Image (tube, rainbow, N blue to C red):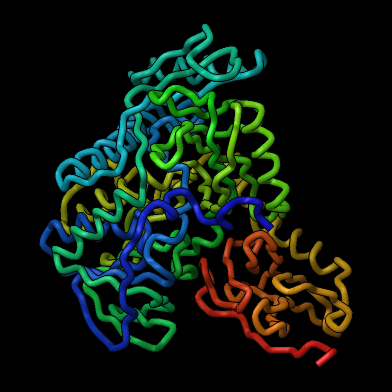
Length: 514
């Protein structure tokens, strides 16, 4: 388990008191129904409410407890060596347009925070992508040349920059941003309440028939427009999104240090582990507070989360003089074939259903961008960014598509490996309270967890309710995780992250000594 003062609670969550909202108990209707209450859902609700529309927001768990709460919150148009990649695989016009879209999203956050006097620690910083090895300089120079070609405000610096560790080259992109996402979104929630937006928690969308959404509790909600902002779209099969994403899991670590980077910089490693580093405004500590993020891996590449966090700790110790480790958290993101998000019409059959997903780890800017695009589409207005990020665009080169075509095979490979594993017999598993494991129950594999309160065993069906993949036990978070498409269930079998919408079957087993 974690050595930190909080077990997978991020700095953002721990420093903001968020309101609670009721659950929905009766059939109802609305003009615009937004499903999902992270930054994407709330910003879409905001833009639509500001148009004077009747808006309702549904959240399957609690507002702002998903990926938005477990982010580095870097507002960056600099997203790794992305612009040379887009220029080569699409064209320079697309690369420039994507840069402009990200800068527009940063400007939007700054403008809204000023308009509503939201104190969210927003500040402008320079993004710095740095190389630590001489062998990486040429690749960094290629990206710098694309910056020049695209008239991006940035430059390559060979001299040592104002960093607390040695580098050999740094590519700067100016006028980026950082903020406290939950302070910002708490302010947005206050605006939504003033605008009469209805917000409901613990309401899970299960399916849509015509212009009616059905919840897992059997409640019906009629809508004129539907915005799916559930991280992984819950209407999965209707858009075949399960076959369009790779799921990447990454980690965050917050420490105090006497050797932080300059407050004017936000860092992204180009080589090595490729970690991000940013400062955090933290008045509760005398020493500066720094957030490290990264060590991402695909969901089917099952890594021990405790081990990944330890690697991140070692990296942080190498880069700065750390004094206190405060928070550790995990998140997962959808990665698309061409590194551009999916924002626009959910499918090609319905002109009133919209989706925003596949943000490639940059959900702060792309979540805001989605609200700018979808609000225009609902209003019948053109949006210059829509064609670039439409879910129905031509996606990627042949090489990219070939790479993504292996996603089902990778999932099958994990499934075959899990099938061949030797698991302890359910009657011989020796679990302490708070521990879980996959076990063998005859010819079936089950998930077994020993409850800390009752000391009873909770036995769950070890198959994900989305598409039947075998689940893995995550001791750090005490969750059952799907390596195929990223669904997660708590130890009681309840869905906490989609695309699954149905809970696991659960049985209670008494200990043998009772």
